[in-house]
Picture 1 (cartoon, rainbow, N blue to C red):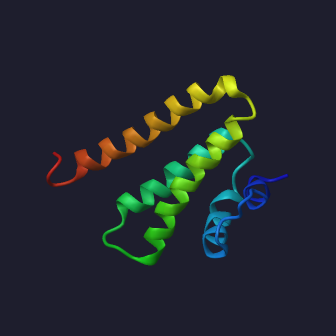
Picture 2: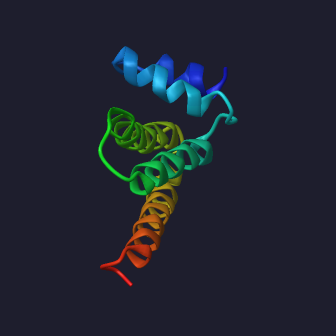
Amino acid sequence: MTLAEWVAARAPAAPAELLAHMRRDLEVRPAGVASLLDAAEAALERVLGASGTERRTALDLLSADAYVTYAFEAAADDPASLIETANEAMGRVSAIAVRHLDASPRGG
């Protein structure tokens, strides 16, 4: 099962438009928690790198949230990995935020 198929099989299902948007990110990634966090990181980078608000940015933000949620759902199959997954997710999101704050006119 591919990562895109795994996400599509979750219940409750994501809204169709969001799922279609997410499929583009997930079809190129192997299955697993790390790939979901990679997808979240890429989507968040697109949001923070956008020069305005647009529908795609909203879908990227919703996707980033969903990818992290699905990463925790996948990690729940091995409860001992939840702390590691939480630390990795927080580290990645924090690093992206810091990078974008440092690059902003107000942050640097």
